[in-house]
Length: 287
Image (cartoon, rainbow, N blue to C red; front, side, top):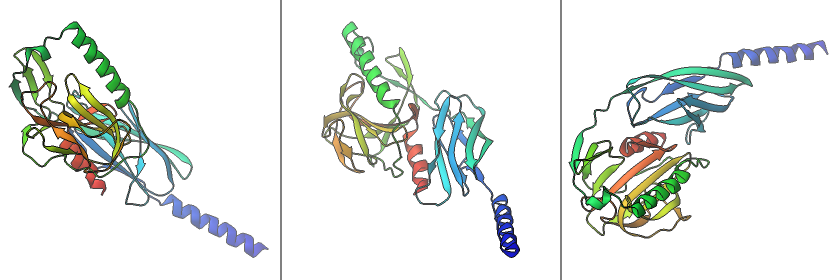
């Protein structure tokens, strides 16, 4: 009996030593990024549960790495309006049943986006009361979509086109020498009628004509990640439809507020606009 008790105590002691030596790693793929880019944060270690983080006003859950055991990841969208600085990210998780808090710093630098001057129809700048009401309703409907977070996340993305880029993300824009904004997506060269394909699997949340975006499609990929395809000539999908990567969404056009035919491609994470091409590079690291 004493021998059995001794063996049991020895086993428990050795197990406790093993767990005590377990190391939990917390690190960024890259801890220095420009404003409007996406950070990828990893948390690695066994017996980890309930992992989440806080960054500014965002509360983000970690997800299991799709191809790596005992590894978790989180995406942190950095706003276009984030000032250059070092920002503290607070991470919490349970390890072997114990609640742990850790801090890690993320440095944001100024991307120094370029400027451009555009000429569009005056009716797209100086709106009638009817158009103002329409744009307000469309904005409210879109915000309801972007503020939703569904479970899981698709981790394989492609560019919707391989054509040359005609306008980069983030460019500071002056419309008709009056209206200032920044370019919220990447514009691809696309003649009217060019097939446009989905960047990743997901569910269509918006598929209709809108004042600024024209005929447009918005796809939910989970985790608060949405891809957007604007200014299409025609749509081939419906709201609520499940979409596979590289599936036809419609054909390019020049609807909405445009200077000519093209595809405007955008990504939002937790309703924050981010550089779509940088996001694709980051998310595909998980493959």
